[in-house]
Image (cartoon, rainbow over all chains, first blue to last red; front, top):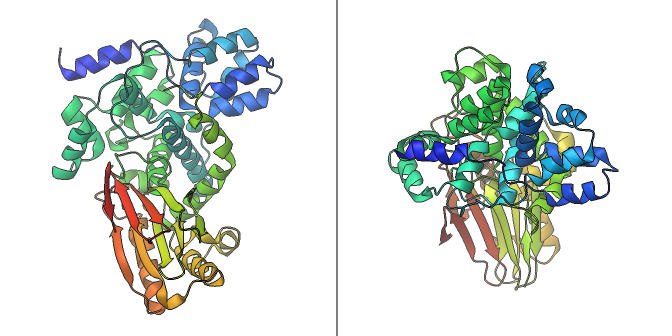
Length: 289
Length: 158
């Protein structure tokens, strides 16, 4: 079994992603008195969002109408005991392996994911385009493969960064060279197995290389540029830094200018300011990763 | 001793020699320190964008978001709290750019804005760790004014 096959074998056994469940669990104990609060926590947490979408899309009804957003998913789950199950899937899976690499604490990963999601949506608004609601979900989950790699696979970050810095490779190409697979592909593999709709899994797969996608997708372009803007802003930035390629085709299709990018960056930082309470809760000892 | 964390578009200063100012995850943003070794007062700012031109309302609410308004305000606050302008030592870190593409070039533009501001005030930088594609964390130790930059697990003094 080569390295790629080993990694895919590990990923195929992942039944739930780590997430920040402490606050959500405590809200459930109060019989979900404040449903809006619960939705707010879940929709900004990549682990809880992915776990939730996995569960709702496994149901027969949802398969005919794939669920793409946290809000829609919560509408399917009225019974607190079902919701309790979803959230408990984020609790310490027994097979969690040592994190080795990626240099991102749980709080930083959460911040980066939320920054990407906000950036993609703010960019769409700034450009005046009509984009679907699942843009936020797709952007939030775009980097989920990195969470999987960092949690379940032993990654030699030193070797990856040597490829990046000495061979001038973008980070995802360095992953391809060292691991035989990159985190975008791993994210797609996992979420497809979990039954998430192609509208989301395609964005996860191609968000680093939209030019490889057959066709054009507004959501993909927004998430690609939003991801890079979030990295430029720096919030929650990991060791991979700014070592990614920008698609000029995406830029041209969207009509982004540096002025628009600056405005969006400022708006992202301002909006993130209203979410620090979630991040603080996540980095608390209740966060499972 | 306290560690004071400076978030994006924020500035903190201290006169307590036991304090350490730190800012994390500098991507294209600039972290700028100013320290008066005699008064032992120093500040650290984390600027997101180069200029408040075209964003006056935002600059009014968040002056530290921008290099041109933020650094000037940090200096003003340090002077009001006992620093002397001619003794201030300036150091900078961050200003990274996306690899192989200068479309956004936010890091480069941030550094140009700082250079313009300092040149206009006839002030020179004592040290810098800017550019490239790597994230940086910047520390200012108030006891000596020592500035440390950490990146990819390695620490170096500026």
